[in-house]
Length: 353
Ligand code: V47
Image 1 (tube, rainbow, N blue to C red):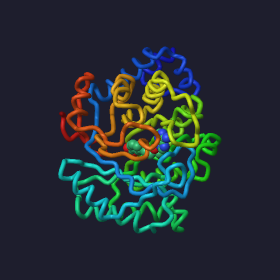
Image 2 (cartoon, rainbow, N blue to C red):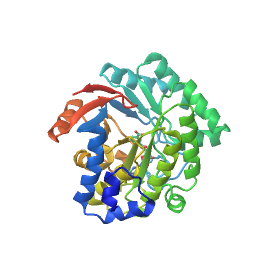
Image 3 (tube, helix red, strand yellow):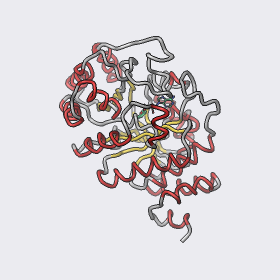
Image 4 (spheres, protein in one colour):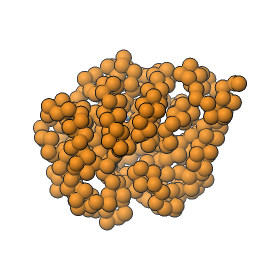
């Protein structure tokens, strides 16, 4: 059986086979991924009405790709108060948001309570809002800095109202590349340990991949293979999110941005390789809205959400600082030939727009 037939018959492919998919012509590869996407999700494109909150940019870690952290090229430190965060949640709740996505830098000055109590405050005032918070990188930082085990931090997250974990901090799992781009931060093994433990608590999470910098195609496939292995065991990942590296204001100094062709191939290949992860998000923040819509024909079935405000990627050049208006979002999806389906954070359908 040739590789195309093998994929269409629903058989799992190997690392070597996945790597050869990059040699396929883009549209042939896209068609393969689109067939799988249509079988699973038809013409639905999922999104949610959400708000990203990045409460502090003071960071104890030094990732070369990061333009957000205040200890590096950005001198403007900030740390929000809980009241500031609660005011944001009050405002977005009044306008129909269903999720807050809270990701911070690794601030060594605030105390563990500052990180955790805000979730409890949000949950008790707005029990219907889904709290997606704390990447595995933050969990690892809190564990190291405050002398608690991963189990203790994860239990505290559950007790304080965190509903699911975002997929950040995954970057690239290959140890050599990881050492070069973000030495000292959560290791790949630890990242998986944290998500495994989270899944064992009956909770869901996402997983990202930062690509388009110094990594090779083989590194990307290896990244996907490691995800596929844990997902076979826990089934806890909802969504895979390839994040396109943004080139500005950081220390990686990549002059040539990745091409649209390579982004779409990587999207399509991840749909094929990750046969056990239900959703593939084209995160419009890092790919642009237009390419994220095109990616819906190359395997992706999700766009993230309206977001409203975003600080991490916009610091590195993404045009995402102010989100997208709901009516524009749904119109763009419809005009691209897809059905805009509002979802909650764990992919229950809320409304077809
Ligand atoms: O882990 C940092 C990335 C991530 C850059 O789970 C950069 O639903 C591109 O994880 N260029 C945080 N990316 C964001 C994240 C996320 C986003 C949306 C949805 C979800 C989800 C998770 O941002 C970090 C890092 O990989 N990042 N700098 C940069 N220059």
